[in-house]
Amino acid sequence: MFAVFLDKISLLEFHMYHKIASMLTARLEKEKMLDPAKHDCYAYGFELMISYFCYFVILLIISIITCTIWQSVLFCIGFMTLRRCAGGFHADSYTKCHLLFSLNHLLFIAFYYFCPTKYDAWLIVFGSIFCLLVMWLFAPIEHMNRPFNDAERHCFKRRSRIYSCIIVSVSLVSLQFPILHSFLLCYLYGVFSASCSTVAGYIQQSRKQPQI
Image (tube, rainbow, N blue to C red; front, side, top):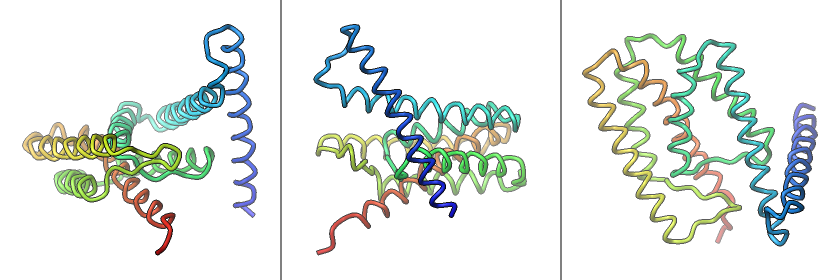
């Protein structure tokens, strides 16, 4: 029952985004600001922009309600920075993607409030090393609507590996400064979430590959 309801909401949200994006694209084409021959490409880009705006609104609302604005900013920076170069899991609708993002954000807030500080050092070491292993073993994960060419795959692989090495180095140095642990853990939770998404994306991609 819930799955059917979720599918209906997802379809409604998709049509709403698509309609708004198409109307905006048509308006800009009328103003001679866009090439009508690339209507679908621009409309898809506007759909993504609308979706990202919804992410921001959800993040802002949850952050204000839970009084975790700066913590959520660090979490989001850690997640988005790694996600851009490593890729990861993709839900099959905007609604499911927003729900997963919200759940992940709420889990981060619960972790921030309830995890004892005596485990900070161990969590920093675990989070950074986990990121390093995932980036070297699985990244990057391409989107089915945006496959990589060889040059792009090599570039993203190099970036994700360099980034993970920097994270480990900074994390190990920061262990000597307990005052930084709270800030680093917020950032590393975003990194850890992006790393888990990369693993999930790898599994998702493997299942979709044809069996020989």
